[in-house]
Length: 453
Image 1 (cartoon, rainbow, N blue to C red):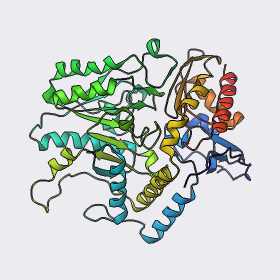
Image 2: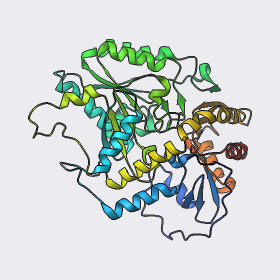
Image 3: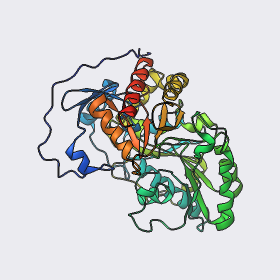
Image 4: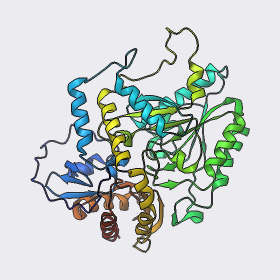
């Protein structure tokens, strides 16, 4: 049954008390001192809006944090979680199972490209990445190639915050305080070169050749030492960097040539953000593993996982049947509440045609964002799917200052939630966004940009 996505004007709500003491909570990826001087507090959410503790309605142009693709407060999901909690609140995932875990794994595999038929569950994108990296190394060892331990990431890549993820990731601030990290890691160059790609809608024409740098890395280290390459089909957290046309095909071909596994980190791009269940479908490229999280439960309960190619899974299914095949997992893998949320979320995506809806809205969304190109200090705009990055010029030789001011201005003065990465504004609204709401968001963004000129 299709849902009608009309402009939904949310009315203000009564104020909610804010705690007097904000000191105890050390907030993640947050300027804590600045936040606690001028908090951005959220007390509720419904459909396209958050509600602040002072009762204002804030339009969500960030899908929470790339998570809430079906919007907020969806009754189908909350009711499924409540029902599951009353029936089975927890089931140990080691040596025991529950029906919803197997049902959800089957549903996810059915959405994935053919051949990615096995799902290993965890609780976040960070855990999904570390799981995929461990599986890659263990797979080669199982196949008699224990020397294949080297991992290849990409400059400006983001793969979560575990030691594996920050090692293959390429965002300097996420790495510099944490020592040597994993050894045996190298990086491809970034896929973004502004001089060649500025103000591009969709995939840039220039840049496919950047995949050939993998051949150079193979030449340095030897193919027999490399376990896997991990890349994002669209790099979100670093500021929305879109994969050039032909890049992923070339990367796949080089990996095949040298027996290297290819992992797509689809924690952000999965579940409709680029108009398909997975970006692998959009680009017609079959990876060996896909990491996912965020949109699988619409952000309602933490969950992540890895889709794994049949040949990799089957390589472990040897030896005595009573023995554990892979010594890896988490206490909360396939948590019953997360599985219930995941099943209800997939139902919503299907019933409301949200992936197809995103494809249909993509040209309109891109045009609306590109209309901001002449606003003050805008130096580039990139769009793909229902996602956009707007680069602003740095202010007063202080990188990130203008972006931080924009975040504050949006929340406190323009009733808008967006994300920032340095001086890049990232727009990633829920897939239920209406055409009128796209216009409203862009009008607010324009005012925000002018306010920090």
